[in-house]
Length: 319
Image (cartoon, rainbow, N blue to C red; front, side, top):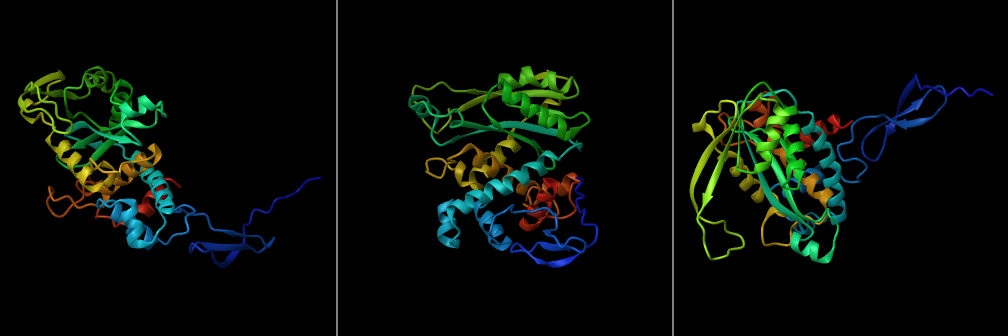
């Protein structure tokens, strides 16, 4: 017996679903279905206005509990919102390719998930918890975040991070980093000599006073050429370190000495993807002329996106 499935070639509009998506009805078989299109909020039963309001609060440094008290949106819903939007924003960031860069700076910023590394080891908790490092590469002229990676501060994470940076860029550019040894071993293999690479190695004063959150006093810095012909006067990590400050100010989970830290690695990665997508495409950078976003300065966008536009365009990339 052969069953011929209707292809629904002739349809008519048949109202809308609870999310506002167009429903269609097949004139041949009578089946009804929803028109396939990108869903910025996935299957969440929350309006776009509430979603953008909550995300805007998150991106301005508010905790989930504070947002829940002000908006009435359940914390579980807020967590699901982060995962749904974070996945789309990750796809948007992964689509960045062929950007012409001139001067790129790379650095790592520390945070933790669930609990700090020493306590995680003592309690024999999951390897996904504990210390977490976010590797960041920024173009110093356009302030565009070209690549980021969440992982350990080791050679494997450095390799994945540099692979993302290579995919996002085109042509030869200058790369500056701190003195981490993983860069020296990884950059030459990933870029195959197609980059001018130098490191800024800072020297710290020795002290007998142990401090937990304040670094030792910097007494000097040396610039070392590692590959190619970098301009040593341009070697610095000031711009990416300034971005680290913005990250700690805009995301509550990066604020030190609070209980607002990430409780799961998936939410941690998702929120970072949302932040960097917002930073590149929606946040006007005062360091750029003409009220531009980094994406505008790079040529990837013609205007600053609203949060709604960011969510919709990110969903299209992940559709």
